[in-house]
Length: 252
Image 1 (tube, rainbow, N blue to C red):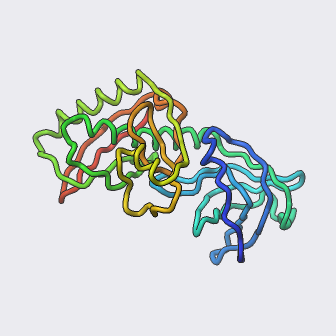
Image 2: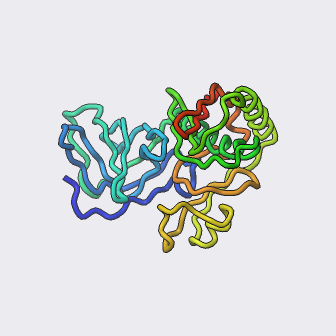
Image 3: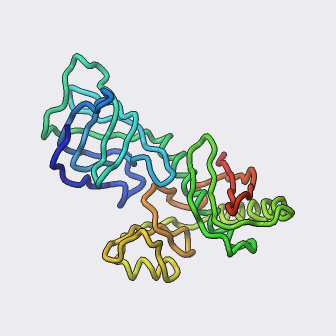
């Protein structure tokens, strides 16, 4: 099993469009449930988290190919779960140099879904629902939504759904660069309107995502390069129940 490993360098943090890279194997072992796990010194694979599914793809050397089926992160170490194409060929040795390749189609879809969730956060603030506070998001293809603390009148749901749809369409048509910055806490707080969530330590350097010229927000996920890359966003339903409001959507 993996022990005394250094934190994995997250290359997608700096360049979300990077789909290929080189890395070094730190450890290769079997999980308790029998799955093969690789730990590298750096990775372009986004692990599942923050409401976003993990990347998939491959890790290969001149002789071996490892199919990445799932990626998870714990204590700043990224674990790549998967299988070798031919189990009889062996395993990567510690220190082996490998080539990483992320499934572009999956990354693009996940980035569009995640970015669309942020875009809806902006739109919600502009339809008279300023009292709603973001709670969480689920940016998986099987049913993405953004959730907010706070209720809204049932008789407003249809009209507000139409307003959200119109504002989202307008922002996508207009476009705007999506930028990512890793900043000192005070600078990050200023970029996000003067405050950050309580779970972010004050001595940290948060990663802030900003859509166009709007206020930023802390996020560790992957996103499109421009708002227009979301392409088609459809607000499918809004539900409010027990003090929570969910806005469901999909991207075409």
